[in-house]
Length: 78
Image 1 (spheres, rainbow, N blue to C red):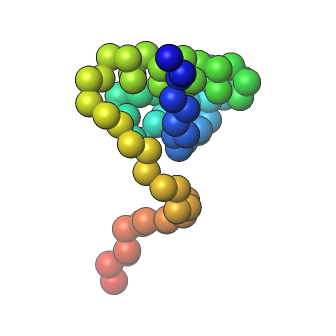
Image 2: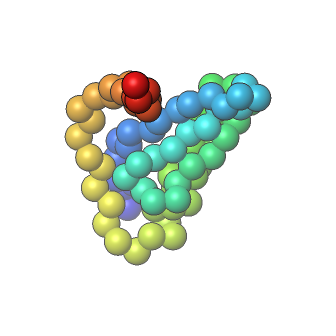
Image 3: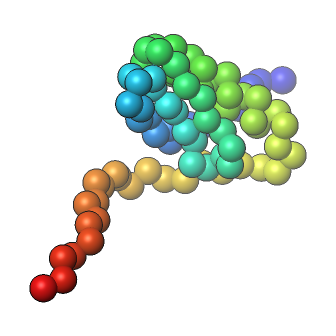
């Protein structure tokens, strides 16, 4: 039986301690961390496989559109 390949969007951020945190928005609770980008990529692949094996529902990755940074701040009253 051939293994079906699926592509997932992975968001990678770096926390205040320099640790990389990777999250898969299509799979609730699927995230990991690592000290390097290489480590976090390896770990998120493993995490995705575990999440897919544990989840009985079919997960269909969403089409990636883009990322936009949005700034929000409180306006000061006069």
